[in-house]
Image 1 (cartoon, rainbow, N blue to C red):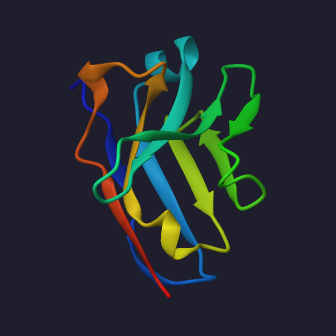
Image 2: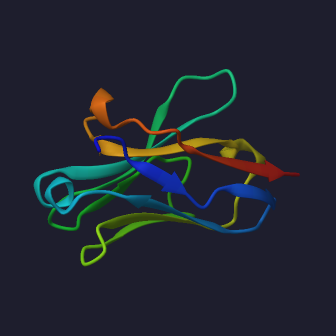
Amino acid sequence: QAQLVESGGGLVQAGGSLRLSCGASKRLFSTNTMAWYRQPPNKQRELVATLTRGGFEKYADSVKGRFTISRDVANNTLYLQMDTLKPEDTAVYYCNVNPPNGWYWGQGTQVTVSS
């Protein structure tokens, strides 16, 4: 199964937190930089955070200090901890490799932040 499966989205008030999960194969984790992306309503998909095989994290300026990308190697799961959420974080969130591979785009998980 090539598609990645995201979960954990929902509706939250501004200032709240959510943790997103993404199930991937062990091979994918061990050979690629993993990433979270998001697509806000009526906007293009954008890169949110990346995590290299060596554990180096990088974040978009808009989420720096509020989001944390991590992984559970034993369970082949990628996470995105999102704290101090803002209405502008509202989007469909996806995981993929970086740079993204069209083969792996899943359905995403919707995050809605109310003001």
